[in-house]
Image (tube, rainbow, N blue to C red):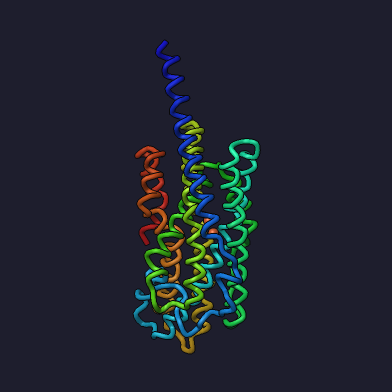
Length: 324
Ligand SMILES: [Fe+2]
Ligand SMILES: [Fe+2]
């Protein structure tokens, strides 16, 4: 008898959760329709990037730690890092849009509100990828040759999508939460940025707000579905994904530090060269890994799903990346 009561209580709980998630999806769809924008008509509006101004703010580039750089060199550093910041979004959004399409396909005969939310999510990520390609083209035409994107978006997506849904959704939620905090706490507030560069990330943020909500729903839904053993494996895979991302960041930071130094009209001594290489890597780790890991909402979601021992394991494994 008590087992039957327990089953009914669980079904009631599931119904409450599904209704709540459906309502959150409906809100995302409404917001997505309200903020919808066009790359040319709303973002670019015939404008180009102003190379007399910064692209990425100091809070993200960490350029203030390189005190020996002159003002124009600091601005150049923000432009090199700003170029990569946009390229890396285009890179991660390849796998995100593919993952969301996979989730939508699982829902194709299910809840049509959830399906519409996921289809809009994927469609927006496809548009964002086009936006970031368009940015790279515009910046590439104005900056000297020699810039290199070290990773291939499709190869990265293939390798990410090999991991379990729990790990992939955790990484995705992390990315879409740090996107918001970067805009709200750094990009939006910096008056010295190129207007077009700031607008790119304002428009991007407007749509990412809904994505983070849907990521959270899908990640928690997946977490309810899996066993303890699958979650333990998911934590290992999430660590692997962060480490793989870090390998890309290390390679991109090395390429960008070299590109930056070649563009500067002077030579740097050995300690300065090392400081530039380490400074760029520290900035990229902050942008793409650490600021997301320390995001209060990500921490809350993750600690609600995994045990203290799993959290310690994750922190220990990522300490060489986070602490440097
Ligand atoms: Fe996006
Ligand atoms: Fe997104």
